[in-house]
Structure formats: C-alpha cells, structure tokens
Image (cartoon, rainbow, N blue to C red; front, side, top):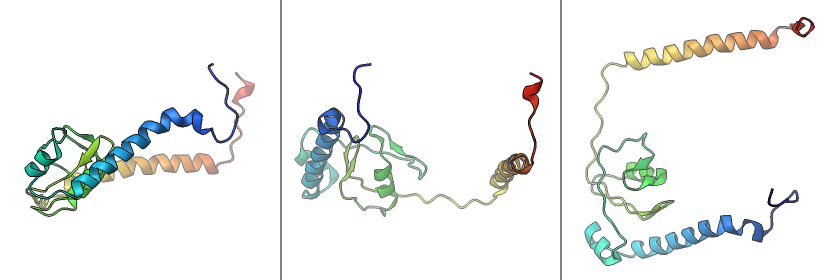
Length: 154
C-alpha cells in the first residue's frame, strides 16, 4: 500500500501523470493535422515537404472487419475513413493513437457476390439452435419454484 485516497474526484496533481502524456499527444497530433491539411501535392511530395518523420506505406487486401493497419497498428477510425473513399480519393489527416494518417485509395476491388449462402445459413442455424436450448432451460429454471434443500444433506 503506497497511498490511501479519499472517495470522490481525484485532485489534478494525483491524476497528472496519467493525463499529461495523453494531452501532449493530442496537442502534437493537432499540430501535425493542421500542418498536413495545408500541404498539397502527391503523397510523396507531402512526405518530402513534411520531413523525415513522414513515411508512406502501402496496404493491400484491407477488409472491413480489420481494425488495424500493418506498420501502424490499431487504427479503427482511419480504416473507417478508408472505406468511405472512392478510388483515387485522399482523406483529410486522421489522428489516431499511433500517429496521424493520410489515406489515399489507390484501387478498390469490390468483393464478388456470394452465390451460395448455405454454409453461412447452417452456421447461424447451429448457433441459434444452441442458444435457444440454453435460453429455454434457463427460463425454466427461473420460472420454476424449486426449493433447493441440498444443504440439509451435505
């Protein structure tokens, strides 16, 4: 035990070590977003203008169910923005926990239509069947008026 805290809101000095890095990162990110928003040209030109801290990465085979980008990490907001872009379109700078991203959609491949949904249908039916039997037994237990007297014997 290193410290006892009273109930209620903590003082600023108590939470400063937890809050300060987050606020600094947010402020740095906003400065970078403002700087990138004012730049024009191709991504390579923007990267050269920005400096050595800017990097360009390509990612292929991005799926809507993905929540992270290779070399970036967890970036759900950026991925959401990527799926809102059309081919050849560029996003505004997006602030994520791991940095600021500018996404350019090079090419979007539309997934082919699925001809046979039977495998998906059987998976859903199996899942719902198991859930229905479990929920039925739980409802019976809840509604039954059973006195559990096992404690008398053990």
